[in-house]
Image 1 (cartoon, rainbow, N blue to C red):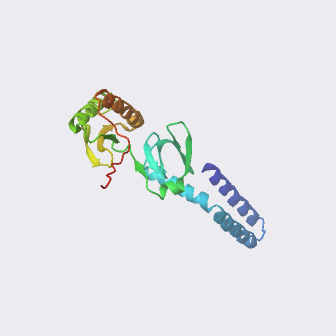
Image 2: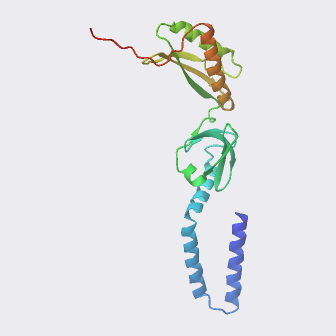
Image 3: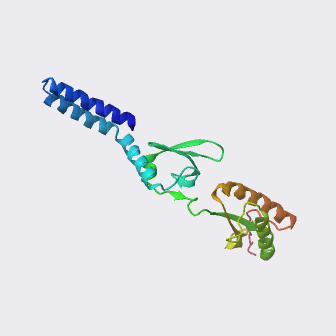
Length: 211
C-alpha cells in the first residue's frame, strides 16, 4: 500500500510540475485516464482480491491459527495477506486462496466458539449388544486426554444400515486437537470393539431362494 501511494503521489507531482511549466496537460491527462481505465479492467481480478483482503482484515471472520472451512478445504490459517490467504493442510502443504473468492463465499470457522465436535461413526453387527458397544466407546472417549468432558461425550444409534447398526460417536475438543482425536478415537475404538468381541461387519446381502 505504501508503494502504491508513493507512485501515485510522484505521478501527481510530475503532472503538477509540467502544468507549472506551461505544458498543455489536457491530452496527457485524458491519455492517462484511458490508460488507468484499461489497467483497472486488466487488473479487475487482482483488485477484487485486494478488496476481499481489506474486508477480511476489517471484519475478521477468522484469524491466524483458526481452523476454517472454505472452498472445500478444512485447514488451519497460516497467514492473511492483502491479496491471498495461506492455509496449511495436516500433511504440511500450503494452500493459497485468493481473498476475493474467500470474502465472497461461505466461511465456516471452527475456532470461534472455542470448541468443536468430532463426529464419528461405527458400524456393529445386528446380533451385537448396542449397550455394550456404546459403553466401551464412551469409555475410550472419556479416557482420551484431549477429549473435553463438558459437554459430555455421547454415543447412540444413528441408523439401521443394510449390514450394520450404525452408532454415532460424538465428543467435543479444542479446535487444535481435532485431527488428533479424530484418528485416535477411530483407532482405539476399533481395538476396544475387537477386545470385547463386538463385530464390525462387512457389507453383506441375504438371498432367499424360492422353492
